Image (cartoon, rainbow, N blue to C red; front, side, top):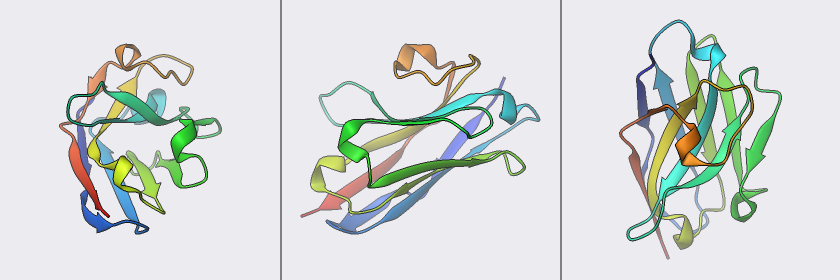
Length: 124
């Protein structure tokens, strides 16, 4: 089992940047595929980005490609989401999630463990 704690959210002006971090407990972090999801009010929780266990494979939803970068440091049990050129449409609660599978998945139901979420608000 793994526990996840997100940090780094906040209020930022459009065009600005934020870096989210997700710290994981336990000694098996490197065995989990990791994902970042977001959920805006009244909407479903959708994938933003995912990264394979070793970090060699990444996935991004189309709306964030070229703006967001997912990375991980297995020595620090941490996954990051660097968000640049933020837009008001990026406003949501951002969650990190861990999956015991082998491939990066895009469905929330595939992920076994979730953090509590961190609010990102982008002002226009």
